Length: 89
Image (cartoon, rainbow, N blue to C red; front, side, top):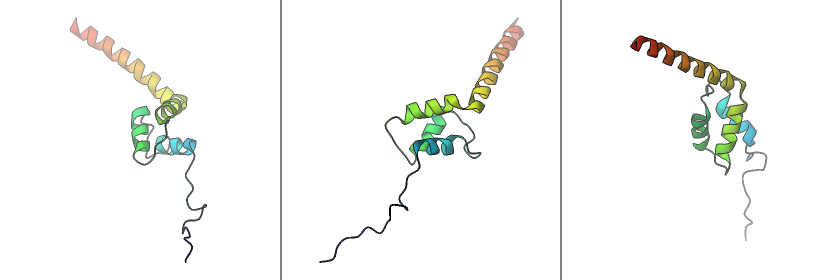
């Protein structure tokens, strides 16, 4: 009787760590720092782990670029609302 042998060695079947996956889905130029929802959706196309939502949210909140963009966007939305209010008068 022949013994079954796996053709895939342990070195070939390595899965990146969660931190590496989050980095790849969020930080690389083709990902574009698109925020929590789009980063999570990008990860869910190929991977899943129980705390993926929380990990993605935490990673995005710690991202320097996302924090800067969030502040600029919130300031612009307030400024835009002020301009619209002035136009109505």
